[in-house]
Image 1 (tube, rainbow, N blue to C red):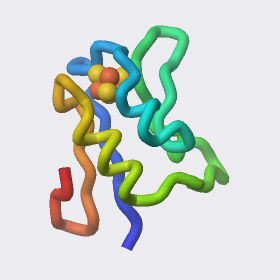
Image 2: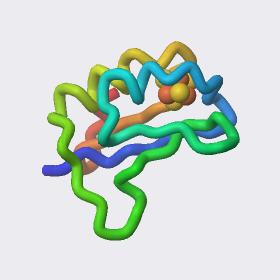
Image 3: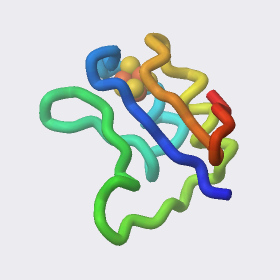
Image 4: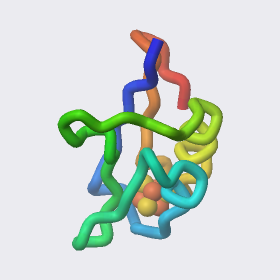
Length: 74
Ligand code: SF4
């Protein structure tokens, strides 16, 4: 089951840890706030789930939540 990504923009401080670990999944917008590139139409992920989880776990402000179905992974 694919990971579902939620980013709380209000908590993001733009340090880019998520993007460091999973550059195909997380990006920083012009406003310096992270977003998931997977929210783009037709986007495909070349990061492993492990890399996405590391990116979420590395977020210093816990702005990223990962879900697999009803289970919260991070
Ligand atoms: S690691 Fe967290 S605080 Fe840093 S850019 Fe990503 S979502 Fe924002």
